Each structure stands twice: as C-alpha cells, then as structure tokens.
Image (cartoon, rainbow, N blue to C red; front, side):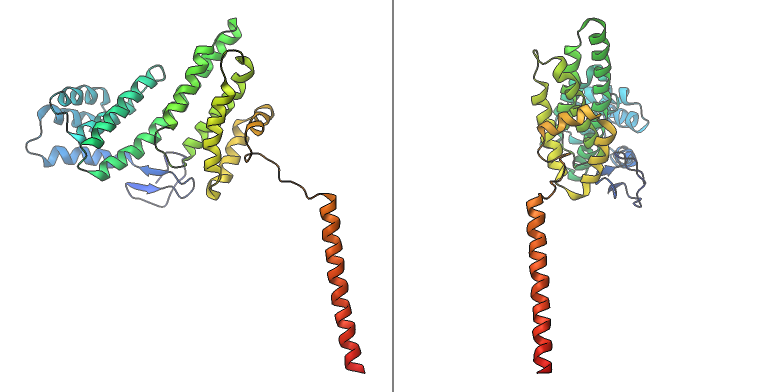
Length: 294
C-alpha cells in the first residue's frame, strides 16, 4: 500500500496503517467509500437528500455531495456522519484562492461531528485523512501565493499581501493534527525557505523571521524523534540553498548545527591519560615478572 505522505510502498494491505518509512498515519480512500456505501445500504430510513449526498461522495462528485449534505444538515444538525462527509468533500474541492475560507468550513464541520459523534473510528480516521489532505493542499496553495508574490515584487516591488498569504495557509494547516508525516516536514521546510526570502525583502513591513521561528520550533520538535532526523536532514538539503541554510542556523539551536570538534587541550588531556594508563599496565607486568623469577 502506498503512503499518501511520502509515496513509499508499504507491506500493509489494510484500510488504515502507519507508514513503515515516514511514520505517517494513513487511511485509504477505500475506507470512506466503503463507509458511505454501507450507510446507503444499511439504513432503510435514510433521508433521500443525505442518501444523494453520500452517493455523490462515493462517485467522486464532491460538489454535489457538498450541496446535498449542506441542505440536509440545515434540518439535521446533529448528524455526525453527514458533517464528516461534508468536511471530506470540501477537502477534495479546496483551491488556493479559497484555502483559508474552506479550512474554516472544514474545521467547523469537524467540531460539529465531534460534538455529536457516535462512531469514534470514523471520526478519528477522517481527522487523519483531512490532516494529510490539508497539509498537502496548503503546500500547493502556499507555492501559488509565493509565485504571485515573486511576480509582483519583480514587476513593481510589491507582493507583500501574497507573501503574507503564502505563510498564513501553511500556519493554518499545520495547526491541524498530524503526526510527523513527510508532508508536514516538507511544509515546514518550505515555510522556512520562503520566510528566509521574505525577511530581507519586507523587513521594514513584516517580521517574517519571527514567523520562521515558530515553524522552526515545530521542526525542532520533530527533529527530537530519531526516526525522523534523516528525513528532515534530506528534506532540508533538497529545499534550502546555502543562504537559506545560514538563515536557519541563525535561529535554530539544534538543526544543521555542526558537531563541536574536541579542542587541542582536550586531545592533549586524552593523550596524557592514555599514556599514563599504558605506563601503569607496563609497571604491573614488570612487577609480576619480577615476582615470578625471584
């Protein structure tokens, strides 16, 4: 089974699994397709409009799923399952230009689902799926805003509004629960990268260094996990230029910091201790030989 975060093939063939390579929790699309179909098949008293919404979701017609479930929830506010499939449908249709608005709508739907939840597995798995989708989508949205900022800056020295938005979508999505996935690592590294570009460019207008520090703190927390260190180092090498790495070194006490070489004094002390130990062993051997032959 392929991990949606890092793309690695896993030995698991279950509908939910933890990636053997990046540690991300995965829930396959088949899990939600099966759940929606089960609700359609099992419930004799299912509302026609909810049934229409679940059918649309199952067919991948997410716009019609949103329309039907939104209409249904106006009269059935306590249906946790409907709120969950509304959130999942909205995540499938999210666009860079409306990312923040869509995120608010998804978050609200999940709050309502949690409030009335009667299927904890469905709720937990939907949260895992949404966290992965949102972080991946936020990276794409951030890059769109970054490109637009670059164009405006090169044309007339503008682009601050787009720069703000490129960081804000990442900050927002990273606030959604996610467990050290590669997608989260890449979003953090990308955010640090563009903050290092914006910081000197808009220094008198926004404090992008402070925003980078928040992202770096999250990356440092992940870096404490031995299983993630190599992946973070490789991602940083792929994302950051030499200048951007210097920026990161300046605000992180842990990441990209060279290991201290022992001082010459330390080396001399170690050599002196080693020599003393060797001399002590030689003296013991001599004393032993003298004792035998006398």
